[in-house]
Length: 460
Image (tube, rainbow, N blue to C red):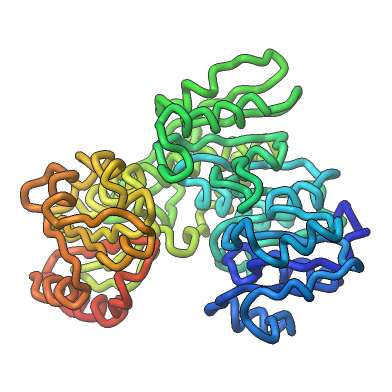
């Protein structure tokens, strides 16, 4: 890392997805790592335990914070009144949010930051896949587990570049700045802008402004790469600095035949790929532009992208047969929902598509935000929405009725469920001959056994 002086580091909320990966990455670098959390679940629990980093007990304890610590890194799961955080403040120990520490560790590197309301994990994953395929040395911080990478964070002294997935959410409980403002990118990407995180950004204008700030932060001799078909991304990416390269992209030219998507190169060569959908073709174009800036030639990019299987939980194949496929996807925001459902319908136009969405996030369950879903679920032949009323209570949101949810989607035949067993029964009773199933959520449909359901679907 650029800052070798940080040899004793404590992570508050170490059980988080990205935080436990950071703990493991620092441990590999020889840093003495400790951590705390009030609840730690798998896979974080098992992975931390295997490395000897699992806290002896769950909960917060101010005595863990001592003056010999070089740094404390605080995750979003902690609260501003966290006793360990207060103790670090009292002792004057250096406190970082996750993005602040990543910047500190990469000050001497070229920083490539992938931002956007959707697609950023896939674009980041594509870039990492291409660079690794060609033996390039790089560090990274990405929000999903990737095939072939055992950690989601890598920090070294030697890598000249770092690829960062740039989340627009808040940096920490005590730092209300969006994460992607803190990385100070040299090359930035805006994959698209679609209002999200209503609990933090109460208006579309306020949300869009965070991306405008990100765009304006692109430095002299830097590059800003953006989806030129996305009206909001175009708006914030209007060239304003003559010393910055502004690069727009569109979906990569392609053909679809027998359920296989192939890229069409400038030489009219076909490159079969293992992902599909317009959104992924946009992601590929964005990744290609970034790789071009990093010195990867077109033919080398295509050679690598042909073996890319996608990021975990992003339009991930669960099971398939000759007449059916089952996919799961992390999609929950309106733009992601629409893109994923459309992609599967276009890939298999002759098959019936049954698509099921779980409303699970603060925004998706908020009555003020629900109208954003209008028209986003038109592609499936059978559209199903699920939510758990107890989640509303947990998030301290007002009650929602199935009728309210149905009204928001503006689709008269949408099916709305609030009981996961009834949902499972409904799906099991569908005719699965020449039919596909798409399950979309950032949750688990309250423990619905997807493997068992997928087996039933693919058996017809």
